[in-house]
Length: 251
Image (cartoon, rainbow, N blue to C red; front, side, top):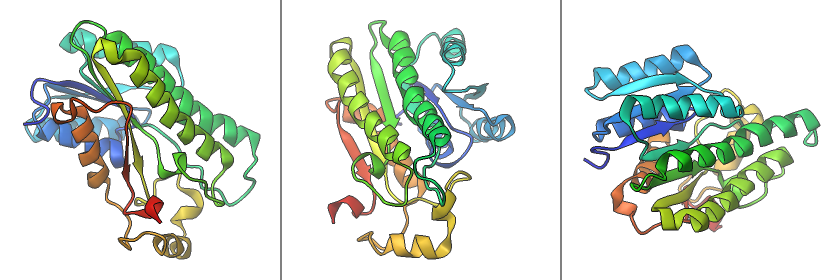
């Protein structure tokens, strides 16, 4: 099993890609999966599902924009398991908006969750992994971190693009510590609560016309990419970007 003996923390794991990744880690034999989110009930449910399937999981309430919350989350895992082997910085909010693409309040929220949250995750993930064992950090960006899109708030492109290069910088800085840092760039997925204009059926139909595979992705397909980068199967991969978009950015 690809996660046997590994201790993992997944942010934004109450739903979507985060929940799919946490469940997959549990199914692949992780020693412990820490499910973190601000949505207590849904997060607790995901952790319970992992335990009911034979895995080991705990829920931690966690605001990724708050550094003290990062201290609590990572220290909670260290207290429980003694180490952290895998960190998935998945928590994020959508930038699909029908209104003002220059709204400063939305800019601040997007940068806070999507960018600062990942920065703090890398900071505290490295802190936990610099113990001789090393580890793997996977940052969930987006195809919007690679190309622009007129229907998105500029803060979404900016935050997800920042995650891409933050990943490469961290990979360069911490390779000597045995810590690998990679990014995953999903394309069009089923709508999130925060998906805004991309929940519109006609808008989604138009977007799908630009996807060579002519369908939206499944969260399990992104979770499989995250699993690969988290496991020892990708032991010589760091600073890379893995695009899971049905070919959208190839056109």
